[in-house]
Amino acid sequence: MNTTALVGAQWGDEGKGKIIDILAEKADYVVRATGGSNAGHTVVNGDKTYKLHLIPSGILYPDTVNIIGNGVVIDPKIVLEEMDSLVALGVKMDKLLIDLRAHVVMPYHKEIDELAEIAKGANAIGTTKRGIGPCYADKCDRIGIRMVDLLQPDVFAEKLKSNLVLKNKIITAVYGGKPLEFDGIYTEYCEYAKRLNKYACDTGTVLYDAIKANKRVIFEGAQGTLLDLDSGTYPFVTSSHPITGGFCAGAGVGPTAIKECLGIAKSYTTRVGAGPFPTELDDEVGNHLLHVGHEFGTTTGRARRCGWLDAVILRLAVRINGLTSLAINKLDTLTGLKKLKIATHYMHDGKPVYGFPADISMLEGCTPVYEEFDGWDEDISACRTFKDLPKAAQKYIEAIERLADCPVSMIGVGADRDQNIYKK
Ligand code: GDP
Ligand code: IMO
Ligand code: MG
Image (cartoon, rainbow, N blue to C red; front, side, top):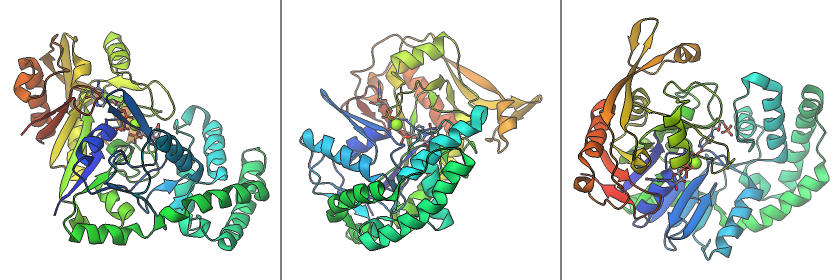
């Protein structure tokens, strides 16, 4: 079997898009299984930069089949805009497939996402306001509209009508917002359906046949382990399961369909949105990471919160995802820092904490305990083997392997698809 799951090992934005694009060169299939247009994956190829939200990052290779699986929530407007902008850049869409069971993000999901965040005030999650939470909530509530419904005008009309009755009550009576009109939404979404029809199919069976035929399949993670609805920093999480276990449900395959599990992490930590972040830095090092690392959100443009690498988080990611190796991106961003730190564990009420706490308020009261390392000044962006790296950089990577208890197989030294080191 020739299948690999690529999963975010932190709070998202670990550089998954870059690694998927690199590995997709040899892939027959790339599959997105979770999340929606909250994701922002950047792929840099020479002088061209592609920002992908719903379309899998294997789309730049004309022979690779790109699947949007049943676990993804699809915003038809955004996916079509993304397709149009890629086509304008010369990218072909003829190998894109969208699952019939995938749920559709509707205008009321986005409206409620926004209104609910405002109503939460100081407790707001800092969502991407893409309607992700409300759409998954409807899926669990069994009132969602799926692609298969959107494609049948009568079924869609009926489901939209009944949903609007309920959603307009929530929008007006609970949040004091303005009701949404059926006619405009129905006409607009029927047009989207006409355009999306040719891509829709039962992608689970396509994938099953591909895996049986020993095709090379990559499962593309969105978000990251710490944003997982169960294992992340609840309630400051997304509303799906962006972990390898979630890929099975979201792609319609069994757990034995995934052979390798590659966790993607940065050489430091970032987070967008609210919630606890033990190793966050509000000093000149944090500033270095923000500006040298260009840490501004791909989807919302927000400045990302930055901090030291946290091995407590990496160990959680190794365990929950069954990682077989790690890819460490953005090692180049650390260049120029005199000293580097990795959190080995936390202290809470005078006691050491080695596992990631379930209790958010406990996590907020945790102080990281750091191991310190020497930095380096040499430009590493042209290094292509592990031995090319300065000794201090090699030691930093080896410390990650020891503290995370997982081998590192890839190291990113720049945003371009070529700027990558394979480590055995
Ligand atoms: P994703 O959501 O996990 O795909 O990550 P994003 O694309 O949101 O954010 C990662 C950012 O880091 C993007 O701007 C990438 O182009 C960039 N990037 C990825 N790997 C590297 C690397 O090794 N070095 C540098 N300097 N930038 C990188
Ligand atoms: P990629 O795939 C980073 C965060 C949001 C917010 C929380 C909930 O690019 O790594 P949501 O809109 O999902 O309800 O927001 O999750 N979030 C991400 N942070 N990268 C992402 O995706 C994210 N997708 C959601 O900032 O804190
Ligand atoms: Mg991103």
